[in-house]
Length: 339
Image 1 (cartoon, rainbow, N blue to C red):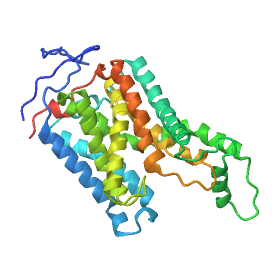
Image 2: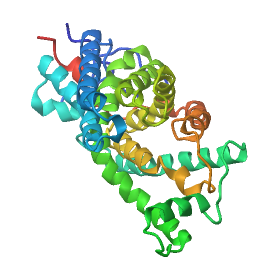
Image 3: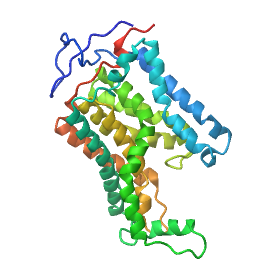
């Protein structure tokens, strides 16, 4: 395919008309056309590898397999492998790949660091609000004083007759550990974000910001199918579980995509993804004893979460945040012709 003419980013507002971009080191460029051949190749490779990584679970004990944690971690890096395949096919020079994915350079530093901090905190706030809204709507019984549900979980893991530490102290320790857990989870989330927000989202931008956000989020959700159909996340082993995951990923994809586009950097989205994974079990700390929460409804990727994230998306759209684009290296899909 031929190299599409790049469109320079603007400092705000609507995208500027096509014009010759500046040249030289640090130049940013956005693709003028979707490289569909590369996009299809990326999606097929990423999803195919995800099914391949999950195959031992399907052939064995599913989510109960002792290999589950390892294979899930391997699966999270399949989008990055798909990016490598596509960039090799496109003959993108190695020196340009980090820039194309928004991984380097970290400029402007202040904005990148600031939005990375936002990426760390906002998922914690969104999941906490989702849990509290679910409780207020009567969808789950919360115990925000005695933490009886969490206390029961702790007791079930202790030997008979062992004393239970003060549950409030345990809950506080869990909450304080979330930021550190978010950073650790970011190491695995990096494998996904290289694919979804590093490569796919910029490649789809010629469709428009909103279509690119929604389509990349839907692909992200469908990619989870090998684990979702085993009952992961929602406990549903049919198409309902996959549809729930698609909806959740579209909703969260808007927030993570905004971080990517607004900063021009991959790292705020990586940290936000890690933060989401770290705080996903918050409801388990706050439920009342005897309560079995339905994660399809009250979980971070569930229906109540969609509503909370819809409010976030409306605020971002109304304030013009989704029209802002930070400096972004030329997406790999637009950097060189297909061999």
